[in-house]
Length: 464
Image (cartoon, rainbow, N blue to C red; front, top):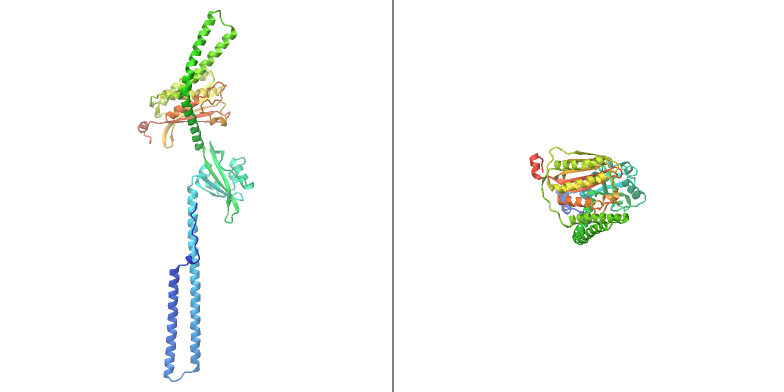
């Protein structure tokens, strides 16, 4: 907020020293005039006294001289008063103008410095002000925004235009409204708020729009929620897995003994054999779930060392190539030359990549294309190696994307919902990140980022 300006009274605005100086100068001028006039009269009277006679016209001239002196004095006072008033008015105007310029400069500095985007739109729908944060958020230049109608800036059907229509025409304002916005090729999420912009008389003269790119903030909130759920799962999974492991092992052993005993007594009826197969299959499935539970319950030991991702990706390509051919999937890789090593556990990184490829294959039941590409990037000023796995599968719905890494959340009928949760934890343990973007019917892209070993950057001549 602006600091309020102290309200000055009329007398406080008057420059006392200047006025005192002018009054003294004026008094001095009047005193000089009076002395000169008196001296002239004295000389005249002395001259006539020596001649022993004074004509009548002399007194009339003296009286007229006194009148002229009074008139000149009043005129001097009047001119001086007008000059003083004009000087005070000019000084007051100059001070007010300087104060106004300071306030305008402060408002301009604040508007340009705040991290939230600000747009002001008048009642005619024209953009009257825009700050650099709004330019950066909307990925539009100042020339494209300032002075143009918002209907020209935002195309028909754009969510921002719909919000502005409601605010200007129907006085329907929004607060903390998150909306999708495509700035360039990457979809973003913008948090929007609108309010009436009032003039000096308190009447609305337009609308002020506050906007902020919250894509990274929402992603961070999702990661925090996932981390909280994983922490709760870590606390419960150890006890649950331990308590279930013993009775499950006993069930599996007794089912095996029962199967052998029934076979020795003359064979199994078809329906009984089917029931036993179902029970055995479900026991094995429970065993797999418990194994995943234990991976959350006990932090796995990692042998951290320099990992050559080219070797890891080549091994995974050879491992998954046969399955890709069976599913009629064209699997290809594009790995940069001179890729720096990363710091991590080769086995766990391979587990993450295999899990992602299996999900990609399952999303392409009728075949398709799947690619693995790598490149060196900077993430928050820290260099990292980025691995991008892209497929042409059925894609993922937008409402499912935010829950992909939650434990036991799956869109598959036979999935456990722990595969991506385990991959997420492995990436956290490595100090890396994993994110997924997808379009229903347009495929899915998974991006993994792993920190680069600092010593390798010096060998490659890359600035850390």
